[in-house]
Length: 496
Image 1 (cartoon, rainbow, N blue to C red):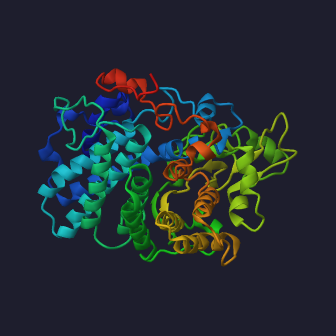
Image 2: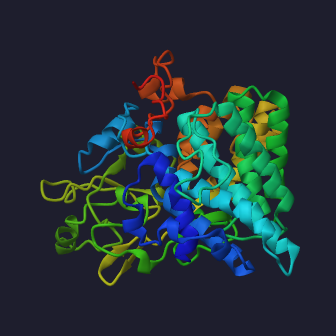
């Protein structure tokens, strides 16, 4: 990736206080750059799009799980009694907790804005290549603002792109969230209009954009008053994905094998490779949170247990599933997903020296050169979710038969039963969607959003029961560093 492309994206740090940007990435200072040197050729656009997805991957490496999973009351602090995971798991969030700083999302938005600003002026041999670059930028900007709007509500709405520290609007205020949703909707429309047909696994495609469209319109239908029209739009988008040539793999566990990550169930993933794991004390994504403490490896090996039977992480185990979620995942002996996602251990593991109890093994990575490496690609979208989005949309339209049929497509692969769900009513379909998602998407950053989308958060998340009256309890505070750097940003109401 060219450092000159990243530099412009980092100017958004002025609004969020990421003080180590230049040191961490060793980039050229913005004052040394001009638009003329950055945006001349097709290769500059290609580089910019690649850089955009690098930023998005970095943002989602932790954020997808922190924002989309850990507040769902399905997880608790693991071997290490970590204060943050205890707080987020009980929905008591402090203003400097992980996840409160929106900096990485706005860095990515800024990179998309620069592409939208400059790529139209570049001469391309094929206009479809220009369209694809712009479609990727619209898609990524819509995705980032979708996370921002759902996580913080009102937030700065930036569309110009920062290229100079002297540029106006470097210190924005929070824009009403309705305007963010309006931009998300228009960006999805533009992305679909411009994106050429075809499949791409690590960048946007028509199917990936339609996944975002189905998700957004379900949110609009249930949370923004969109009603039946929005459910219909979501249903059409989900059907477009299902008809785009993807397929559910016959064997569920094969989806996540590191030697099978180009499979035809994945629609959009963030790739990770062995060479990115630089030290024994760090990992490039959040999957290391779930594994056994690194210090247990020697003890386990001495007891005759290999590294893939009890996968050890690059550091201490921060997160485990709750007792209730553990029991749920293993409750159906016919469902292959529970035992493929979670491993439970008994003696001699649970001792004073080896505290392993349960481990999410779904994304355990690989054992290379006597080291655990986290080379599982992170799935943002896969086909199973399209079926469940279809079920949710059809249910919203009172089409129980269509919803049940979509549910059974997912259930059949997991249980080997053609019609697992029968004779459901509307409430039963919602419960089935939630239960299927809990089994299907362990550690994939989906459950928090599903609870909110189905308006069941105050009923099914035990740490939110009875808290409906708390102001913005389902939103996040803004990190103090963002407010210190930009005093025009006001704290989320309810967190002052």
